[in-house]
Image (cartoon, rainbow, N blue to C red; front, side):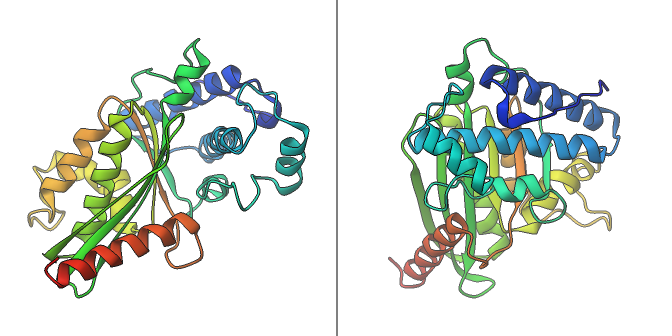
Length: 275
């Protein structure tokens, strides 16, 4: 694995920053391929660069240019606050920068070299997306629903939600991620960050999945993996692209997580009424 020192990412040119991100992803991929745990340095640098990329994207949508020449007011806001202002901040950037359990980050699936590091900076940026997702169940099992907020650079924000009269909370959490990934991929996204409050989803995609695939979809105790169809679909959607799974604490004031929760609960309520 090549050692790479990020340095001050806040002053890096966009294409240089994308190149750094690609190299770090390649190093992470080498760790995955060999079964080597991520070094703390790699995890911290990857979170730092990814956080800067996402912050710049969001600042760009808030009126700054993404070519590195931000307006003086926007740069002052970012330097003083350390992130975009509350009205324009993309939730998830803070958790990515913190690392550790909250904001726990891991890349899965093949990087493939698509998008990131391209000489065409606009095309690279347009392939990055953030999916916020949540599931809810009025009783477990019982009527449930999911809610999703999808942001793909260069496209309007979109929301998704649907309910099911008889389901489980975990099924809705996985379904939310599936639908969010599908929506982002349909818009050409190749670098996707999924933000969820489901430890079940994050642990499954960043840890358990490898063992399930190796053991023929059996748990360590030998029982069939629950929600296998959804896990298989998530695994399929990750192939050929870079997907980062980020955990955030639920019901803690995270704006997008709260929105997703409201969408999921509304869908579950509608499903319970047969609508």
